[in-house]
Length: 186
Image (cartoon, rainbow, N blue to C red; front, side, top):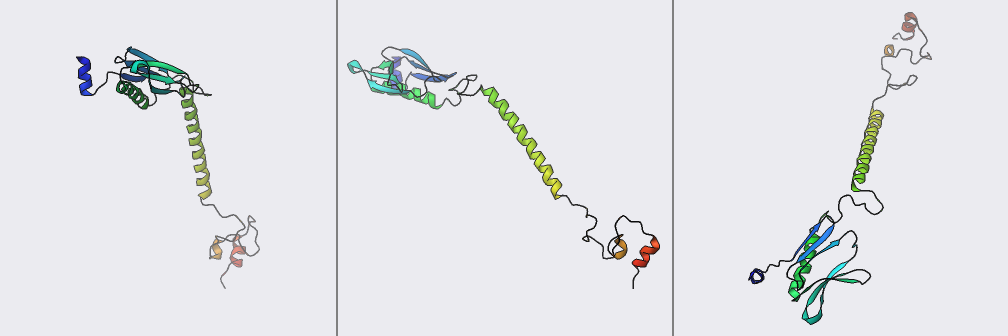
């Protein structure tokens, strides 16, 4: 009676989940009811498919790249087998981030925590480099005092240009009388 109610509602009792990097399939409707699991880290390029079995049954099988097949569960109808296949597909599609369990080393790399530490160091180094670059740019754009000996920045009033022009040397003491005599208005 329970099976008939499920058929009327269009629901299957087949379930599929991804837990800690394993695909766990439960098929109570199969001719031989089964709970089956597969380690997804080990199964890199496998395929699930429905094949016609003996005596009009349909079998959900796992096919590896080496053309090896593993029978998962036989079903009485093709629709039941396809529903089981779609349950497995749905679990794999919704397994975002659950295929590889935390702590399993990636190919050629350490655990996920090592990658986080490396990214924190990289971010710190990048931040310090940007701060240093800002200081260099800030220092380059700061105004500079005129260099002695340049006539740029001299005042048009000769009295304000102490020691400038007229062959006088900078840093040589000059009496007030000498200065006034040289810079007297004519």
